[in-house]
Amino acid sequence: MGSVERRVLIIGLDGMRPDLYDPQKMPALAGLVARGTRFPDHHAVYPTHTRVNISSLATGTTPGRHGIVANVFRLPDDEFGIVDTSNDEHLRRLDAAAAGPALLAPALGDILEGHDERVAVAATSSAGACILWTRNQPYRVVNVNSHFDRADLLSLREKLGPVPPRGNSFEDRLERQMYAARAVTDIFLHDDDCRVIVMWLNEPDSSLHGFGLGAPQVDDALRVADQAIGHVLDALDQSGRRDQFDVIVMSDHGHSTVLHHRSLGEYLDRARRELELDGLELATASDFIYLTDKPRLRQLSKLVRWIQEQPWTGAVFGSGPYGDLGGVLALEALWGDAVPGDRAPALAVSPAWSDAPNEFGVPGTVAALTEQVALRSTHGSASPFDLHAFLVASGPDFHEGVTTGLPSGAVDLAPTVLQLLGRARPEAMDGRVLWEGFREPAGEPGEHRQTRTASCVLHEDGFNPVIVQERVGDTTYVDHVTNGRQG
Image 1 (tube, rainbow, N blue to C red):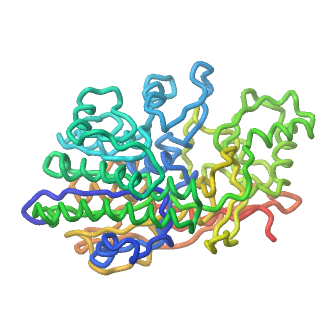
Image 2 (cartoon, rainbow, N blue to C red):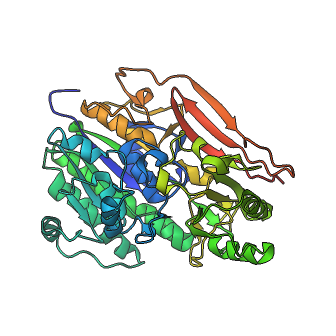
Image 3 (cartoon, rainbow, N blue to C red):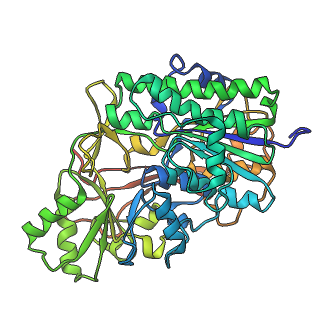
């Protein structure tokens, strides 16, 4: 890998669907694409939430192994209850809880600490999303939303000046992203102990949620993100460090246009009334259903059947014995047979999706289970529009001007980064090294094939969704899950 120690720069564009990439709007990124390897069939993990996928990126494992199973989930401990993973205080409480630590698998920051090296993070994301990269080694972290109640991290922010205020104008959004970019160029770039630098931008995700796929404000968000990318790449060139870095630009998930605004909890209240299920004790968080007691199977089957009959339901997943109900898919099939005990829901509901266009002509809609009426587009479902993300890698170790033909996924980032750095990967990782992108591969990707998984017990009335997965060697990616009722 040359005479200097390789370093890796990861640039995250939260929520950028692959089809949002436009070389005219993003010339800095276009230069990387021209000089690098494009992975056009790149996959998020389910559920397609930000903190779930960042945890998979940082650990190389599925949600069933790393334990961040949703942006918001529940624990059976009444003293804890709801875990909001955007909140670093919640993550700290989870570290100390019986169901802890927050991350059940080692993240890149933990692994590199064993070699006296660091992961540095500069982010405009939530505090929780930012700190997951280096959960137990928070020594080089700059976040516009928090200094994590640490004097050393407050000092890092003070070196950059006041944090720009929030705002929706082009200039407001640009200043926020450039604050993170300056943390990279003014602080982290010159510290060789920072073997991995992560710059995670909350655009275009924030603008997508607020304005919708195809809106002019989203075009502005892409230009804002590209200016931050260009600032960092210019600094690499000017410092003579470009050949020291492999640069990976990626997103964590896609987006879909929202059709409805009703939460799963609201729908279940309706089910209780219609089915007279007053004795069935359950709770919801995100698109998950938790049982607070062990109901009679007949009661639960009645509820599941009602959910499957609703026009907003695409698929129902169940963990453990609940995956054996008619028309219910096993949650283990999405998470590689790993389900994290106290954190696993009894049931998960993925809303119905379609490839219909929105008002701007952008395909991909979802009957989102959300109470947030301001959301114009969102993510979280098992739709192909949510599950496909962006990935390009450029640098001394990657092919130039190549597009791969194999699928890849969030779980592949950590093992690939460790290979680039010459560090051993933990055996428990679910991902693989993306050898097909390397100039000098030391291994083979493995055989590529597609699998389709149906319910263990078919639904007698025809609600039978199918999990469509891609497999390369021993690594599996969820491509999409079909709607239970077609047509």
